[in-house]
Image 1: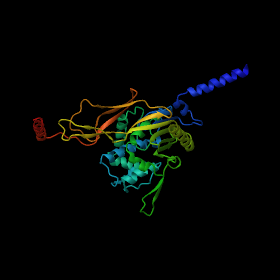
Image 2 (image 1 turned 30 degrees about the vertical axis):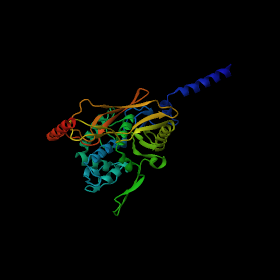
Image 3 (image 1 turned 60 degrees about the vertical axis):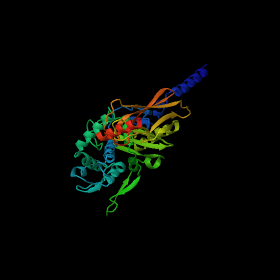
Image 4 (image 1 turned 120 degrees about the horizontal axis):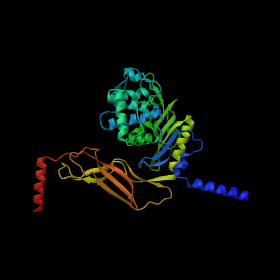
Length: 386
C-alpha cells in the first residue's frame, strides 16, 4: 500500500507540474538568483515569462535605455546629427563609474558618443549628450520622466541619465522591457548596441578600446543589444534583445548575484521564448495599409502606415484561426496633419476575438488645400458631372 501511495503522489506531482502556466514554469529556472525578470515578444508586447516583474528596483546603467531612446528621437527628428560635434563640459567629464574618459572641452561626434554609451556604458558620454539636447542633465532627466509617463511606465522614476546610485531612482523589469521595446522602434540603435569591440579616437595617438559590457552580443546567436547595469545596490542587471526566425524578444533580469548568473538567466529566458513561440508577421513597420483622402487636404491618397510591425504570436503547434483586420480612424481628425502623427489604429481579430491594436500614422505631412485649389476641384467636379 505504501508503494501505491508513493506512486500516486509522484503522478500527482508530475500532473501539477504539467498544469503550471508556461510563464510560471519558465520563470522558475534552476539556479535563479535574480530579484525580478521578464520576457516579452517585441511586436505584440506580450509577456511570455517572468517573476516579480513589477517590483521597483534600482536599474543601474539600464537607465541608459531611456537616455538612448531620447537621443534616437532627437536624431530621427533631425534635431541632432550623427556627424555633429559635442563639446564635453567639465561636469560631464567628471562622471565616475564606466566612462570613455572625456576631457573637459574635448569635442566628439554624436555618433562616437552614442557608441560610447551603447557599447561601454559611458557615464561621461551620456551626460555630454544629455547636456547637448536639454542644456543640463536635470533638464534631460525631466524629459526622461515625461517620456516614461507617455509610455505608461507607472513604476519608473529617474534622477539622473546614468543610473549611478541616487535616492528615488527606480524601475521594474516590466517597465524596462517596455522601454526597450520603444527604443527598438528606432532600429538603427542595434547598429551600436551589437558592436562587441571597437575604438574611439581612432586617429589619435591614444585610441580608446571599447568592449561591450553585454557579453551575450558575442556568445548568444541573435543577440544585438541592449544594456547591462551594475551597482552594489542594484547588483547585476541586463536588458537583452535577440532576433531569430523573424521573431524578436526582450529579456530583462534585475538583481542577479553575479554576471555569470545574470547572463545564464537571460539566456534561459531567450531559449524559452524561441523554443516555445513563433511569430506570424502581417505587416512590416512603416508599411502602407491605407490611403487618406480628406476633402480639404492639399494632397489626395496620402499613405497611412504602421507605426510598428503588426504580428501574431503563436505557441508552436497551435493553429491560427481566421484573421480579419479593420482600420479605425480617429473621429476628430482635422487638418493639417504631420508626418508621424497617429490617425487611427489597425485592429486584428482571430476567429472574431481581438488580438492586437497597432497605431497607424501618416507617412507624409498633409497640409490644407488652398482656397483656389478647392475652387478648382469644385469646378472639375461640375465639369465631370456634366
